[in-house]
Image (tube, rainbow, N blue to C red):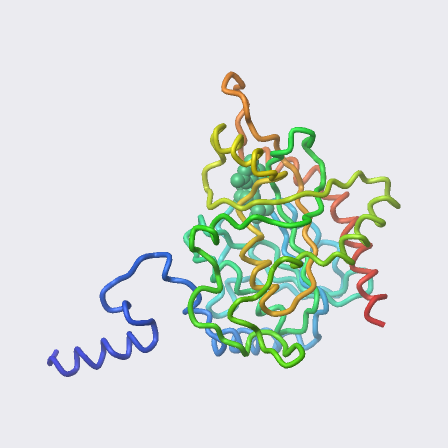
Length: 323
Ligand SMILES: O=P(O)(O)O[C@@H]1C[C@H](O)[C@@H](CO)O1
Ligand SMILES: Nc1nc2[nH]cnc2c(=O)[nH]1
């Protein structure tokens, strides 16, 4: 290859990938480049060809919680593997399907299986389906997950309404919005397109939270309310880490949600978060009980009905809100 051809090849790489593409770069710098607006549009167009109906509510199912999709009627299931450039879930308890249909009278899209940074995906790649679902028409996002109970009063099987989160990966410089800020993502609000510095202080919608509390009370389901924090995983926490999280006022710990909610806030979605406490976090050195993923899935499946009931009723209420 001539020097000229080589340098042309390098400059096109740089144009597409940024200044360090030809020489390698720090992994934290690899963020939102692959799922460009155009690539997301292609994925949206592919899906709309199969499912023309607009979903109003998007739901992301956590570990062992994908059974919710069984309640969807007039269902269209698109395996992630069939969608160009869509990642695959590689974790037990996460199927890899995008499910469309009607839930309690409202048009929904449900991710049966999410992506986690510990699977090797960037936070931007993990969360980009949020943008896909918003561009398909969703105005509301429900995120669910399995989590460890950090709060000592929490019991296995409790459901926690997520009031707020601590995004540890972002605090360490790993946020899905790092990189080019494409203002075409999301809808225009007042005079401002999606901002470079999106506020996330009210990412979890307070009105949705109070509706969820009423629904839980109606079903006699005790609902906790607390702060979720995401760590990178895939290790569960050390005892010292749990003790640290407790000092910080964190109630539940997991490995997901925060990057999805970040993109959801960026594209103007109203959001609700529910965490199922699948295990108590260890805080004594003489305890022999460790968190294991098999228990996480077992408890999720055991408690899925309660969570599904809450979501079913909530989705019905979203419909009422819209009319
Ligand atoms: O996808 P979620 O957050 O529900 O899954 C949690 C976090 C890890 O993926 C896994 C650990 O057991 O469960
Ligand atoms: N990080 C983390 N994620 C979880 N997901 C389910 N349980 C746990 C836990 O104890 N820690």
